[in-house]
Length: 334
Image (cartoon, rainbow, N blue to C red; front, side, top):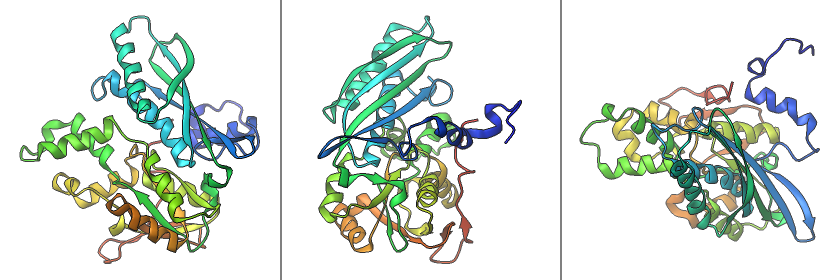
């Protein structure tokens, strides 16, 4: 294809990723992180993520401490999505010379406070000048080779399980951006919980121990929902060359969202809001049933993998029309 005169915006984020795949080692790009075999019994997992001022955070909604926390979580969540536990991270920081030293101190405190929950350290990194603040993280993890979770492992008949609630982070951002649009009688505790979901999300390493209690299969498909639940479902199905049927009534949405947003708005936040950092897992129905029973309200079965190619959202009560989920409605760079 002739690319003369084209610019990044012409391809978009997903197209650009496909373009640079040709420059990467074979079979390492396509999941939430790369898996590199080290020695018998363990595999190295590596992931990289960027946070850019004005794109991923701003002083209006995110303190420097929370920028650090969110940067750590974004990378740790990719490790959890691969079934891996963290070893350490490196930090690349670029910023203007006028940034206050206190801002930098708080950034690194946020990073370390998040990492400390998982006995993980900053191993090094790099710092340079830039006209905008950029935080680039490399995270390293380890996983047993037979416990790698991959997007291309879904099979027709698998049940789809999601952890936690979806839509909370996007709702929390809305509360931060437009606090005056929220009714005064909205409980302060609900407000604080939604804002915390946006500012200090939690990577779901806690799920992995329970997952391997209910299955010893070397085939579990999944990824995290950092770019939205719809994005995760479509990405898994594309990688596995399958389809899916999702019941919108089964998607776990915090009741508090219905108190301030319409059902349709809450559903859109859950599907396309992103940054919930929950896990989306596909596994045989009996294992999925056992996992949901073990996790209780911390997980829900929302659908099943099919032989088709579309991800269909249906309403089991047949009030809302069927729709096809796509990558177009969520956040896209460029």
